Image 1 (cartoon, rainbow, N blue to C red):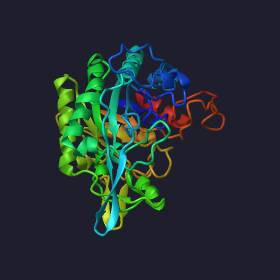
Image 2 (spheres, rainbow, N blue to C red):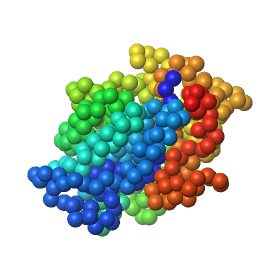
Image 3 (cartoon, helix red, strand yellow):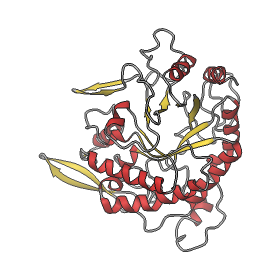
Image 4 (cartoon, rainbow, N blue to C red):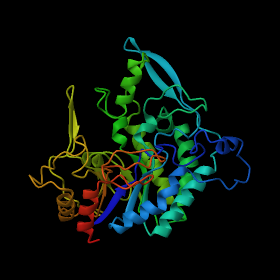
Length: 387
């Protein structure tokens, strides 16, 4: 079984590639607009690249061969901020965000992604680029001084005209770059955990609705549900998968639950996530199966996210299959016994900013942008992989 790693998503989440990756940097600000039709200059790389080669080398040294990486995330650098539209429904005001996609795609998206893939090729590592996150469709806020704000871009899923512009614009640009690096690409992931865009607003403990609840507490009208319909989401995933297939690349969708594989598109390589966790809130119930299913099929699904035994309690729930012995090594051996072809561990140490070089744990090394993995987790991965 291959072992993979989810690269630290909180490092400038949503700002990792594209035109605003050097926030408040005068050099970037000078190049921000007016790029359409011009030959791209030799852009400087984002700060995230400073330690990428080192981190990939360290991952490879412990036997990790595949990395999953969120690219556009919540869409904050894709166009200007969405606009709040307030409607009256069921006797109360509700928010619908309206988004107008940019007329041209900034060349820095493709430039940065190509440079990233070049680093992966040199490191002899494979990549699962996750193009967008479910937070793309979540609540937004007032734009910052640059006219940017996260989320609010559900129109990219629910409106056919905007969806087509999004898929055949920025997503296609990134897929065309990935096509140049077929040896590096394990699979192109359309979206991370799309199910959260369909689940109802029952609690601020649910992803998407946690931020919507904060906006509601500020006096803003509640985000309208459903954000998108199941049919619209299915169309979005299907159309994006088709673009990936036309470019002769394997596709996947980062489904949160095993059951999501039964009613939403999955791409060429089915994927689900597992945290041995259930949600039972206000009469609404969903969650992971109590026992991990067999990894069967042609091809068998892979596990895109799971937690180590050092993760915080919300993620690190004991696996019912394992009883009292629930170490990371136990989990790896168990997944292999169930036929899992690839599992990707989620970081188990809190994130720090790219410029914060203080140790992640007592006695740890002083290092900027270190891998967010507990030393005991690393040791158990090495034991499993024989490194």
